[in-house]
Image 1 (cartoon, rainbow, N blue to C red):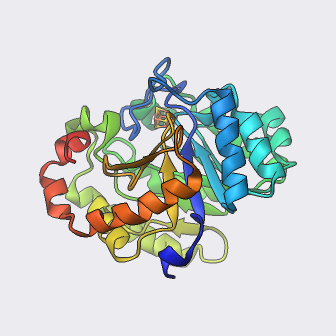
Image 2: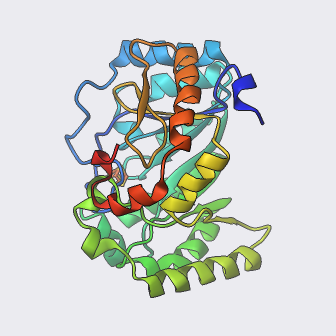
Length: 306
Ligand code: SF4
């Protein structure tokens, strides 16, 4: 599809806040309790942006964070978008997502609620999410399904949990998820600091991807096993080859060109969604001269690369 023919992005990933109730060692957004980004969009600004997304005709929005449910205007934004006809995906760690939250969302066009299940034993889960409860994450999954909402499970492979990945796929299936999402761990955010402890070995990854390929076939028709592209480099190369019709909005309204890079192409506090879309299309030109190898070399400090 020729992106320049589109009047609006087909998808917007919107980080409502960087604040989170967990402090995961592998967090790719650098989130932690009491750590919202400076200058996050306030309620009025967030609702104005929601209205702009509606009037621009964006069909699909993912609300994420941090923990999006911690944003005081999470439900208002979801309801403004959903009632306007926008399909929604919600990403949550599931620590404060129960029957009440699921019931409130079920009135909206929810494409999925994704809960992170980074382990199948409390020990492995807590090795990455020291103040988190795997039991609560499972309860959140059950609440999602009981409300009749589609469930996805996400898994970030690290040294301490990668051997539980197969058990997590089985758990996700049992919990009623239609998809299991994973991929290589990203060396950004908090993960940079703990990389030597977190990064799986090559052998771990080989076993992991072989298992995923096996499960993909074994469980076809029961749960989708999503793990491609494998690495950040492959994701970047794919983005250069086939740029997505997508904007990635940060909590302060800035728009990133790619999750893995620090390029900012627009500011939705002062620019409209249409303007941001135009700037994204121009920024893709700069990305075409980007060398993923440079990123790989400087990956230890991704925020400083560009
Ligand atoms: S990985 Fe998710 S749950 Fe953990 S700190 Fe980051 S945003 Fe919060």
